[in-house]
Every structure is written in C-alpha cells, then in structure tokens.
Image: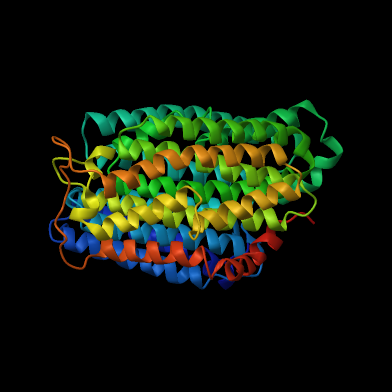
Length: 495
C-alpha cells in the first residue's frame, strides 16, 4: 500500500542545496525570456546568489547519517563533502568565466538555468542511497553537460564534441541502467544498504556478476577509464576552457563518491568479480593515458589524457577497497581527489588567462618563453605540472604517496609498480612544458597568447588559492586533512 513519506524539518535542511539550485534555475530561465531582467548583470546576480546560498546550505547540512524519501536523499559527512566540493568548484568556474572572452555567451538565462540544474543533479547523485535516484541525478547532470558543451560557444568543433559525448554517454547510460536492473532483479531492492544485506547469499549468481560488471563499465565511462575514455579528449578540447575545467573536476567528484558507496559497501561481497576487472582498467588507464599525453601538442588535449591517467591512479585506490579495512583507501581516494581538483582548476585557470578570442586552442609551443612575459603564470603552471607529476613538495606527491600506500597495504605490488612507471612517463610531458616556459624563446607563428599582466582579477584569485593550497597540501596540511576525512571513511566502511 502506498504511503506518503514523512517530510520533516531535517529533510528540508538536507534538501536545501538542491531546492535552492532548482529555484535559481527556474528564475534564470524566466529571466532569459523576460524583457526587463535579461541583462547579463541581472542573470549573473541570480547565479551568484543561488550558488553561494547553496554553499551555505550544504555547509549547514547535518553530519549525522540519515536517509529520507526511502533512501532517495541522504545526509552525512560524505554527502556534505561531495556537495561542498561540487558547489565550490562551480563557484570557482563562474569566477573564471566572468573574465573570459566567453563570459557574454555563458551568462545568459538559458545557459545559467541549465548550469544550475545540472549542478543540482550532481548534488542528488552524491547524496542518494537509491539506484533510481542515482540514475536520475546522473542523467540530469550528464544531459546538462552535453548541452552546455555545444551551446556556450557554438561552432563546428564544440558541437562535434558535444555530439560524440552525447552518443557515447547515452550508450554508457543504457549499460549502467541495465546493470542496475540486474541488481534489482537479483536483490529485490533499489537501496544500496539493502543490496549490502541481500548480496551475500546470492553472490555467486550470474545475474549479480553481470550487474556488477555493467555498473563498473558505466561508471568507468564517466570516470574516463581506458578503454571507455574515447569521449574525453574531444570533449575537453572542443569545450570552452571554463566548461572543460568544470567537467574535468565535478564529474570525478560525483562518480568517485558513488564508487565509494558501491565498492566499499554494496559490492563488498562481490570483490572477486569487480576487483580483477578494475585492476585491468587501472593499468590500462595509467599506461595508455600517460603514453597518449606524450604525443599531444594541444594543451587541453594533453590535460585530457593526463586526466585519464589520474583516473587510473584513483582506480588503484578503489582496488584497495577489497581489503578488510577500507579506512585508508577511502581517505586516500578523497585526499587524491581533493589535490586533483585544486591542481586541475589551477592549470585550467592558467590556460584561460592566456587565451584570446582569436586563439582559444593553445598549443604547448604557445607557452614558449612564458616566464619572460608572464612570470607569475609560468610559476603557477610549474607548480601545477610538478604536482601532476607527483614531485615534492606539492600536493600531488602526497596524494600519490597515500594511494600507493593504500595499495601496498593490500599487497597490490604490481599496481604500485605500474603507477610508478606511469608517473615516470608523465614527468616527460609535464617537465617539457616547464622547459618551454623557462628555456625557450617564443616561436612564430606561435605565441599568440594574452601577455598583458593586467590588474587584480578573480581568475588570479583562483590561481593564487590553487598555488598556495597545492604547496600547503604537500607540506604542512596532509595529516590534518586525513584526520578530517576519517568521518567519511567511517561512513562508507563496511559494517
């Protein structure tokens, strides 16, 4: 018999970030078709108010684990961390887009409406215990990304990237949905917590194995793990750089949050099924991602293949979730994700600072001699490249240390060896960029970049924060951050 769920004040506190974003999205959409409130300034004001109100609401979310709407909405430490990360990234991207040459096309009513709505889908995804709600949140976020990728700066390149992303994403969504359907048919419940209890007696059933593998394939596509990475280089290259920065970071936050709930919880009794498959994906991603990045000349395309390799490193830590004690792997994943988000935002902020309306597809050669023109940007990019390569004293070094330590504790010596080999390969193309910036002269016809040092800007604020955070996370803050992540580790750890 159907019964209406009980709606309490605690539910509204938990759902407040999503409700605020949906309300802001509706207002922005109405602004887009109005005559008196459709100016860029009015739309931008609504976007900022909505985003910061959602950040405040997410920060005030209860940390006690509770579920509402039959598992459709969760409160707790992991949900709050995931929501805050997505909202803070969104705010940083809006700050960078505000001063970019695509600002006028981004701050439009329909674009901001889609942008806020897809963020709400991401928040739903990271705070749900229900398979249907997970899928709805994922598709709400994905469809919004497809549209924004090709609509903010419509040209043949961006629309081609959007169509490729849409077609491959639709196939991946169908595979993921089929996996969810098999899990539901096997376990008789849509709740992840219910699947945890139902799986052990039927863990040997073929449908369960197939459901787990199809779910892994769907998540592997969104995480851009090899061989499901085909969409990433084209999408990253063709999108406006601000959208690329948003896509490269928020997608990983939401997918890794779901992966933690699945592989440390619901699929804990199926480690003999997903564990070997994920090892293969991790190895392929680390090796192929780094090798393909070696031959790229386009800067965003190089960062795309670098992102694929970093997804492989995160997959190494997920493999360690098959251990009895999942506390260290969970904290290692979250710490690595934090460092990756900060460094990626910083790297794309540098790219956005150098782009011009006539040259928004920078090559590595375009950065030749950058240290003489923009020494601050050259220093910042050097810090980010060293962090990506895992060099001390940066956050990337500590992040890889924690990931490899979690793998060693689970006796994954082969994966650690592959990770070290991949990191060694990556140093070539990361340091190649540093050498170009400091030791090469600008080469015609390249070098068509924005060389005006200019005044204080929001993009420089994001850059400064990213540089300082990258250095602090690599020196004095790792222990404190790992301690603060203990709550999330406890929440997703197997009982």
